[in-house]
Image 1 (cartoon, rainbow, N blue to C red):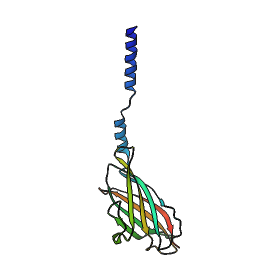
Image 2 (tube, rainbow, N blue to C red):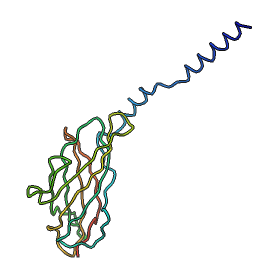
Image 3 (spheres, rainbow, N blue to C red):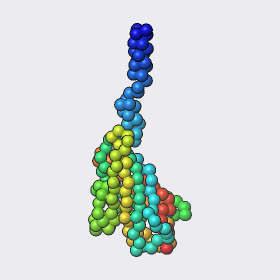
Image 4 (cartoon, helix red, strand yellow):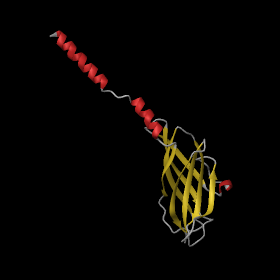
Length: 167
């Protein structure tokens, strides 16, 4: 009877050990599948148009970065004509993802927070752009593009057609 108990206990131990998964391997494969940088959202924070050229809007954006460091960030306004290609109206370059408004950035600013994700070597980010609308003409709609870059210059972007309409 003792032998049977030991054999049964041994079989249970072997079965339980063989059922555990190698999570490190799964995490490594998942990390390989994730994009280095991705922007997944963009919107206005509690503001509705049409806007005036004296307005400053707060644009929110978010995404994720894997195995990389943040680099530069750019935003660009495009005119949305009724026909033909969009035309660049204005753009701002930020040397990093956190830049206070100044004359160098046409008094536009960006603030971004990185939050560790449950995925290996990955951070999610959420940011706010404060953008002055002084260079946008009245009576038109404009598209906004946000380009986020890693320190090694990999880029992702998000855009929305007719993001703002001017009075």
